[in-house]
Length: 460
Image 1 (cartoon, rainbow, N blue to C red):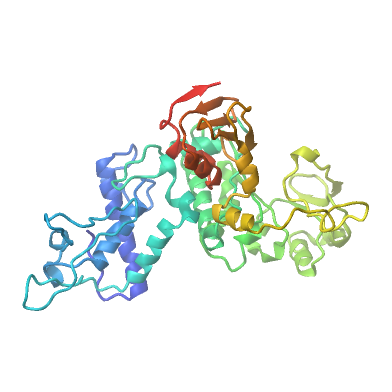
Image 2 (cartoon, one colour; image 1 turned 90 degrees about the vertical axis):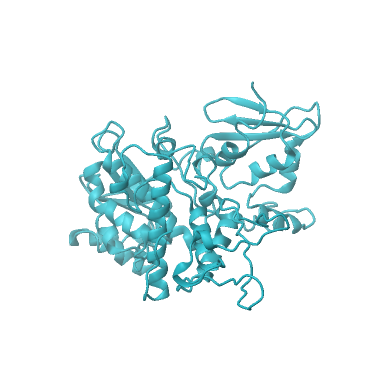
């Protein structure tokens, strides 16, 4: 266990303790599972070596909450006073992966029985440790802390490493990979975007002379709704990563496309580094002035037309075009458009919007899909569980490698269609496993963690 810093305030002390414990757990994971390209002498807390965040919580919890048979500087792992049962076995030794803390004997300073002392940890970090535990238990953060085959166990063993993740993102036959972060809690969005961008940038930067690197296979990062995590006052991980990419990425084959309806909320550094600007209709004078300020003075008159541009019309200036142009962008086919059109409020020519006939209101379904965090209606999910003998019906899902999922409740058969055209049936799959697959934040990760290799299957 790492030594604790003395004489530091709580915030700084907690940060230093976490960094030391990170390094301590990294070293332990590296010793148990060596990784090519890194040795103990060069290992840092930022080295991409997998370790368990659950183990980090477990060690922090023990450090601040354990009771001991010794006091002060004599406390160690060997002096922890676990609560024992009648046969002298721990009642609850704890489980890092399941986020179950160990149970300890209560403090006892009286003259009767064994003396038990509270932890001598000088840092007041019990509350942050409890918050970390609550995050690890929260199903909304499963996409971050329970990654299926990418999730390390308590000793740092990870079935699948970063190479498989990068291949899934960058090495597929598809020219476009979409990372959907629309359901991510806003409190961690900035940090998550920063980590994702840093993983991609660092991987392509260090592999720039390889065939998989950015110079051989250039990558364009498209950042939708960028104002959500790239505000002018944002100095967090997302802002740092994007500023680095727009300043240095071009030399290593990494570019960025910043997409937003509120350019005034951007860091001016990011906007000034954009070589080409596609400016569509803007009515807010602050936004207009922000975009106009990035071009030369002789184009100010052209940009004065921003408030009156038609839908789909844009002004294009920069390196991608030899002359400034006013263009009309042809929309994609209706079946290829994103699910982002405006809802219909009222249709005077016929039923539509609020004047359309509706079934009796049942807000119980609203509560169910909210808790399940999957937008399909319960009725639609129930219809997928077809009766015996009826043809299997599948519903389309948004996933990195799964197209559609079906389930036959009478025979407990799960049917999955993959994006490469394969169609599989999995047998004797419990209904709750199908429900978990449909409600998972990532269908692919849930499939890898709980279905793949666990049930009999056949390829159709």
